[in-house]
Amino acid sequence: MRPHAVHAVIAVKSLDQAKSRLADRLRPEHRARLVLAMLADTVTATTAVPGILSVTVVTPDPAVADLARSVGAAVHPEPRKSGLDGLNSALADAARALRDRHGPVDLLALQADLPALRPEELNDVLTVAPRGVRSVVVDHAGTGTSALLVRDPGAPLEPRFGPGSAHKHIAAGAVALHGDWPGLRLDVDTADDLDLAIELGAGDATCAALHDIGWPDRVHHHVRRVC
Image (cartoon, rainbow, N blue to C red; front, side, top):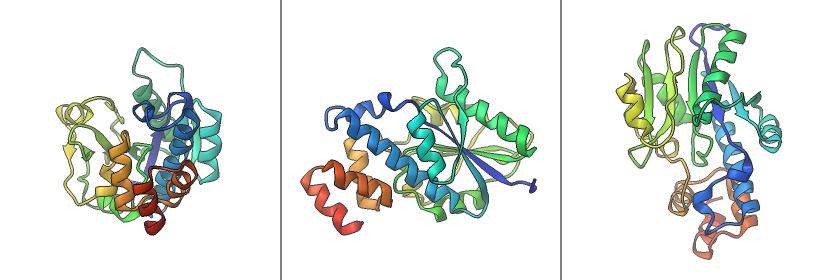
């Protein structure tokens, strides 16, 4: 176990629940394809960061698990859900399993839908995050959390993802990190978010999925140019 090594965890729910806010624009099978593509780009960018030694995806979905393994992530089975907070329970369970396996390592919880994430953004986050505390990267909307970093190997992850998660994490003592990380801050929930990810430069898997899906013409042309 390397001192202060960072291990990342990502939670992904079942594909049949994927991206409901895009339901008026994409058929269920297209939403599922997009979720898998964005996860692939998120994992690929994360594993390219030298300070991150592993990425673990926790999910109940076999297709998500297969995709995660294909891009170099480990898979942790989703635990039996406790109450209504399945996402945070899943992340916390995976985090505990990582420390059982690797010892007192630092932890990073990421959103699964960061198609424009760049490795240098995450590398910068690891550089500027203070030790001994939890840190958060607030999303582009200013209310959610794109990343939760625990640079204290003795502290639990204690994720509070969900509506208003940025405030919840900060109220619980996390420090908001400041930096120019547009790809890291852009988790995709809506059509506007997806368009912005394309403008920033989505990853290869997301670009390929959008080509196949036939995203709206005005964006489709831009995707061909950027990708």
